[in-house]
Every structure is written in C-alpha cells, then in structure tokens.
Image (cartoon, rainbow, N blue to C red):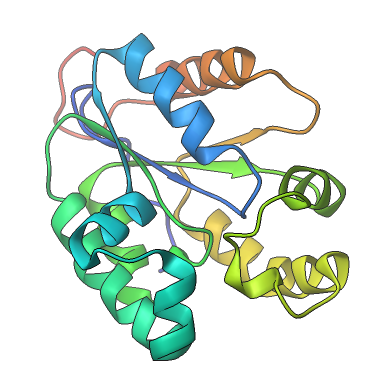
Length: 188
C-alpha cells in the first residue's frame, strides 16, 4: 500500500493502531465518548467470541492461530459504522488487515516510544509476546517491524508519550479535523 487513502466522512469509524502500551484502549474509550461513537476493543471481542483469554489462544494455537482469529474479527468489526476500534498491536502484520482498516475507516496511529511501552506493560501478565523475553529488547524488535506498517496506513499520527488520555484524544480530534476532505465529500 503506497499511498494512504483520503480521509473518510466524519461519521466513519476510527481505527486505533499502535504498539502494546500505546494507550489504544484507554484513549479509544475517551475518544468514543467525545465523538459520540461506540467503543470496541478487538482483543476483548476475540476473548468474548472464543471464551478464553488471548494468552490461552497463544499457548494452544501459537501466534499464527491467534492472527487468523484476529483477522476474522477485524474483518467483521471494521465493517461496523460509527465505532472507535482499538486493535491489537500486531493487527497490522497481515496485509488484508491493513487494507481493510485503511479502506473502511480513519486510521489513527498512537505512537509510543519503547521506553513508554516498557513502563506501561511491565505489570501486565496478559501480553504473550513479552512473557519469555526481555521486554525492552522484544518491544524494540516488534517496533522495527511494525512501526513502518502503522505509518503506512495512518491518516493521523499522535504521540502518547507522557500525555494524559484526554489530551491524546483531543489531539486525535484536532488531527482528524485538520485532514483534507476526501474527494467528492462536501463539508465535514
């Protein structure tokens, strides 16, 4: 995907992408409230549909099994109108996920430094990719692969480092409002 698509209409869904610990869920809830949209977390939806947590899926099916489940859920959720969707950190790994997110809504990349990711994820035990590794090294490796993918589909990029959730949500709204309208759209 060479060019980021034009910004969708204002009522279009907003898809949050970014690394673990970037604040997608926390920011997504506030952003949804401010925009009058419904908030959905793709990882929570995967857990709801399977009846087990993400760590269990990774343990039993490995990352490939989880990514297939994630692909199915993202395909469904990205077609819903008027939602703020917090995606998993690795949601951008599959080309079809990137294509669906970029084509079906407005993609916001929540950028966070590895330092901030380490700080925000250090107490969580629900992050399978960090269980058996040095978190800083693992997060650095993940960012080397994922950051270009996040950037490739983002309509708006907002840093979350040392920022309050409300401030990040407000910066997202300002970024969305500053986007040029998509061709053929009248007004915003």
